Image (cartoon, rainbow, N blue to C red; front, top):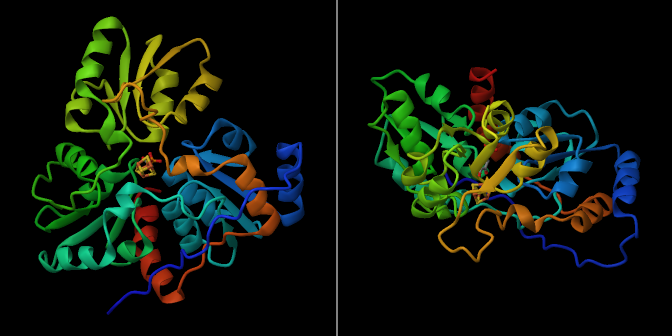
Length: 327
Ligand code: 13P
Ligand code: SF4
């Protein structure tokens, strides 16, 4: 059965006629619209500071599920806002920029994923939350970087597993669970993949006492040099709790804001990219969102995430299973 595709045909409104005090105007509109603002840790610091809830993908899915406001303003990327809509369909879900995508989600077109699944009949399908609703609808279980190993470990050892779409997360999960037999979709994150193992090794020589924290979407050569590997939330918590005064961090730069707020005395160093001149550790999709677009989406209640109800209910089932398993 062909699954309907989510409508993403709305374009970003042109900016213009913006109030001088944007933050104040956003706060006022939020009250008038009876809205809640959810923001991922990869958003710019001004957006994080305005949000009612800042979190990683699992925390935000939970916050979206229990949101009781009329409007959910989701400052993150499309698959995250889509997950919010799947979990809380009676609320209006709006985003600052509907074109804020994700290389992992884009790497896994639903029709090709269906063909891949056809080669693995009977397998339990685990999809990373960084995937489209149509891919989720074909899955048995969803996972995030916070619970991926726990979700895979819940599957009986004699059951074949398909894991997608991030091959680096899959490799890390396989190491943690012993499930080296998983059939893996070969997607990657354009941000985490760009950290350079060679430059990181050089940086570690310069800072011998530093602790290296990395997200599991990084390449194996980077993860091998990490003292701690974990989700976005895990990295923030480890950075705060670590006895190390200097931290080298291999994930999106947005996490620095929360870490600096909690442990301003620590020295935070970005893990180097392969090209020293690029802002490699900023997700270009996440960074499409801005305060200006946040204001406009609250003012206009647009762009809105809409979805076919049949697709939504199919995508909901594996997300709910994940939330139950990682409660
Ligand atoms: P988290 O699950 O750690 O929030 O990661 C989401 C993501 O997009 C990482 O690149
Ligand atoms: Fe997707 Fe990578 Fe951006 Fe996360 S950082 S939203 S995985 S492109």
